[in-house]
Image (tube, rainbow, N blue to C red; front, side, top):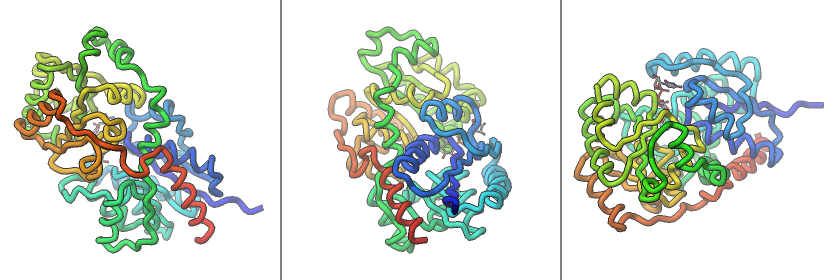
Length: 377
Ligand code: UD1
């Protein structure tokens, strides 16, 4: 009896976990004739950044954890490559599937392609046009190396074709992160329970009046003290209207301490929390009056939920969240942020609709394409 081919699936950092969960499920449900082998690179490793996601999203235990941890881009990428190579030598997979745009994505794609192993990229073709963003480099390189490319929005296909990717390698399937969102929304934790858990003193009436949710972790926003201070000044203005709930990424926590900004935050109605579990964040996001963020995934999730999103970046690689969704890209200019937030609170905020194929079934489409692809390669 011949064994089904191996499919090595890679995750490394927090946003990867939401993307791999429905894919792993669909491989089984749609009976794709492969034996999945899940590699966690260990790029994110804390309980709050990793384990809670595996548990809540029912992701199978990784077959191997490479335990790379943190480091400069070169160190982290190189370490992932060194530790990933023996996995491929051992497993001899038919293909390697990578998701998103983190360092683990590009590192594993590069190892696979040099060994002649086909690369499958989920969330291909997104472009911010901003090469100072590490993720943009990861996206460009990963797509260049990939044999099969799954896209979340139509602009991604245009980007890939403009870069010379063959049309028949590209499949517009929708958004696996939104599969996870719709699948888990009924289990989202109520904001009151989350606030109680973290010892934050908000009454039910406070919450009824509404709250804003803030996330910040991009190096361009948090690694420069002037930018971070300016952004927090704008957030403090929002906090004069409604409480601002701020789950803090480890990178940002370090910088708030280093730049001595914790006392500024404490002097305003900005409630700091540790990084949240998926179902906790989903609960806050789905009930917020407005979300301020520099995350890529949250721009998409707020669009799917119909919640106004103010993106604290100069650009976005996910333009459909602006053209069809609830997202406005404002950068870090205080006047632009104030203007956008004013609109939301005066009821003149953007409406939006859920983009094409963001229907909770992207992973099933991926599984079906994979079945055909395996049959013909
Ligand atoms: C990474 C991704 C980014 C993604 C983000 C989501 C890259 C280039 N960046 O950025 O695209 O949006 O994850 O969170 O891959 N740390 C911990 N515990 C952890 C993980 C990290 O304390 O479990 C701290 C470390 O001090 C580390 C810092 O956070 O140095 C940054 O982690 P790293 O994985 O390098 O990048 P992120 O900023 O998390």
